[in-house]
Image 1 (cartoon, rainbow, N blue to C red):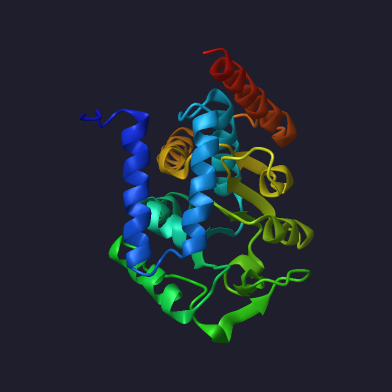
Image 2: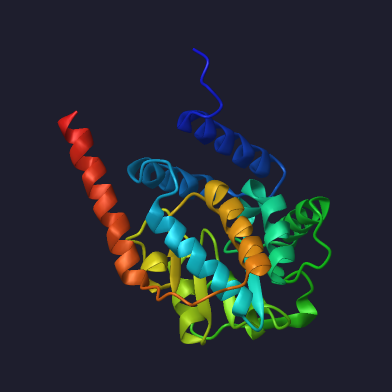
Length: 248
């Protein structure tokens, strides 16, 4: 049976294919594939679409990136495999630096990710040269090593597909954290300042478009964003979808 390209299942299969290519190219590790499987489940539970709740978070994220003094986009293997062009576009739209930061770190993976980003138009990629390495306090994993020209000095950090420990450490280090997380109940989602409960494949292009629109038309009046309340709405959506599935 042929699946229409616009069907959610077709999008899921396309994402899996991109991650498999990323694994073969040395960007993604086995654990990243497992993490994606967990995220795919939550994507199904939120309806495999960008909700109004997610749009509200994207608007808040765009404003935060555009008003930041020193924004940085943190890139891991999964993000580089899924959205290399969008990472570069968002960097250009916001003036944010791009920094590679990995949980399962190796020089080979870092170089593979940097090469992929350069192929998609990135000029400067931080987190590669060890002479600029600094440490985030209160963090034990390899992700504690950051670039002093990037995350270490940033006021706003976009950390898509993040682990909870580093989100907590970044917050304690005084950073304003924005994340993409399909699980609104995760530590990352609950700890971040702005959580976009959406698939990065859908959300990143919307975030880029929103940043460009705000840059062109002006930021306008700042609207209050409450991350906790926004997450509660996503959790309610999941509960409704679960009830509907159980009654089907």
